[in-house]
Length: 288
Ligand SMILES: [Zn+2]
Image 1 (cartoon, rainbow, N blue to C red):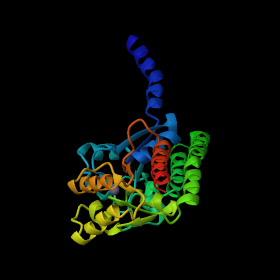
Image 2 (cartoon, rainbow, N blue to C red):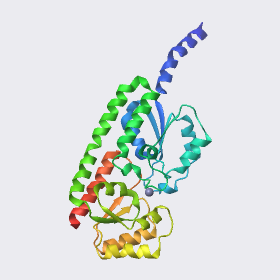
Image 3 (cartoon, rainbow, N blue to C red):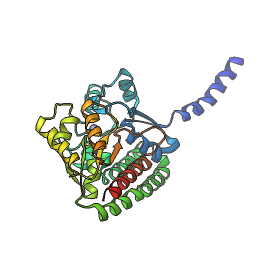
Image 4 (cartoon, rainbow, N blue to C red):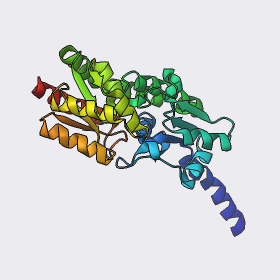
């Protein structure tokens, strides 16, 4: 009798426990995208972001066993692509799972290895990703379609200040020359119409190879002779060469703007990008 009652009680309680696990499990390789999943999916998703430390070089990221475990449970997996997270493809291939939706930002944008991989800084990328994500969430969890739709609309509206800022800066700075230690912010400076000097040097730094002496000399000459109106530094890496260029820029009174690749903790994507654009705007307006 008691046993039966306990069994009945457990059976009655089980659906509650199941409901708590009913959330859509999403894994994002980069926390930039994980933040967007959280914003659009709200209470209906659990998000794991594999790269989330803004003081480590994401190009050198190596997936720990925990990453493979998170991926084995994931219904939706998001990766940047364009060779930014090659470890992700390997993990996904080694553990195929039918029905799992894989979103590659590079594929959405028609980019491939060799293109600038910092795709979240391309103003067109996040709206494309947000739409693909909302569709994937709706497919995985059709019962909450209306919530995903409104989450998508709220997020797209939150991107509007970035679009406005880019348009405003483009009107003022189109054709202005700048330089950078790495091409992290280049999709954004391209959108503003800035000229990005010393690109070959930047690619060498990004790929952890030695820039040529000639390229380094050209970079330093740009700073010393004020051929650039701002130096954008990747604040996420601290190689000796980067520090040397920052010091040269400081001595020459070239404004220096720090950007990161990984979303800093406690910030949403849109606030983070807007604060970086504000910093660049301030640097350029002072230098004009
Ligand atoms: Zn990078």
